[in-house]
Amino acid sequence: MNFEKRLEFVERQNRQMKFCIIILLSFGTLSFILGLTTNQDIPDVIRARAFQVVSKDGKVLVAIEDTLGLNTGKVGSIVIQNQKGKSIVEIWQTSNGQGAVSTLNENGQYLVKVEATKDGSGAINIFDSNGRNLTQLESQLQKLKSGNLTNSKTSVGYKIISIDDISVGQTRRYNVRVRVGHTLNYSEIKQISEKIIEDFKSKEPHNALSLLFYLPDSDLNGHYTAGMAEWAPFGDWARADEVQTGDYSKHRLSITTGNATGIAPSTPKVTGLSLSLKKRIFYDLVKAQDDGVGDIKAYEIIAKKYKISIEKAKKIAVEGVVNGWPMP
Image (cartoon, rainbow, N blue to C red; front, top):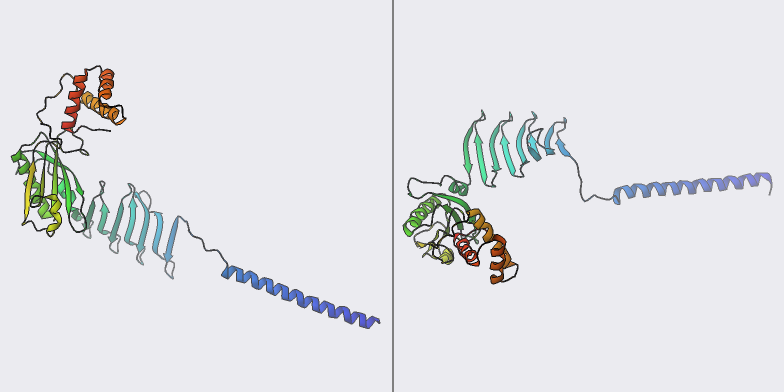
C-alpha cells in the first residue's frame, strides 16, 4: 500500500469517527432534553413565605402571605387588590386562631367584616364609607347567653352559662345550663323557663329545649342541682322529631324540682369546715373510690388524711353529691 492509499484510508476512518461522535453527542443531548421535559420530578409540596399573582404591568392582584401587613395581628392571609393597589377582599387568621373575611371599597375602607368572636361565636360588622360601624350581627345563640343575669320579667336572678346544640339531623335540640342562687321551687322554675323559652322562640327556632339549673358551687359539667325543665312536644324530649322546627302547638313544659340525685336538697350541711375544704375532701374521696380501694376503705383513708370522723366524711359525700361539687 503506497503512501497515498494509506492517507486516504486514515482520512476515511477520521470521517467515520467524527460522524459517530456527532451521533453520540446528538443522542446524549436529546436524552438530556427529554429527561428535563418528561422525567422531571413534580414536588408534592411547594413552600414559601408568599405567592403573588401580578398583572401584565407588574401590579399585584392576588397575594398569599404569612402575614397581612406588619403589626396587624392577622396571619396566614389571602388578599385581592384592585388596580390602585388597594385591598378589596381579605381572608386571614387572627392572632388567637380565629377565621375572618372582609370586603373593602376601592379606597381600602372596610365595608363588611365577618369574623369569630373570642368565645368562638360568629359576628358580622357592617361599616359606612367613613368607617363607622353601622350594624353588628352576632349569632342568635350568643345573644341568648348575654344579658340574662337578672330580668325585669322575673323575680329570680339567673344567668345562662352555656347553650349546647345537640341537634340530630333537622331536629333542633338545645341543652341550656343556667346558674341560679338557690334551689328553685316549681313556680320559680316555671317563671325562668318561660322567659328563656320566649327568647328562644324569637331568636332560635327549635324542636326541644332542656333547661338545667345549677347552684352557685355546682360543677356545670355534672348533673343539675337546682331543678330542671323540658320544653318539648307533649313535654317529652324523646318526641322532638314529631313536629316541624318552630311549630310549638303541641309543646308542653315539664318541670322537675330538686336535683338529679333525688336526694332532698334540704339535707343538713356539714358545719365546722370551710366550703373549699369540704370540696377538696369530696374530690379526694371520689378519687379514692375510683381508684378501686372500695367505699369503706376510701372513707377510712379520707378520715385519717383530714383528721375527721368517718361519719363526717360520709355526710360530706352526701353534701357533695347533692350540690354537684366537682369530681375527678
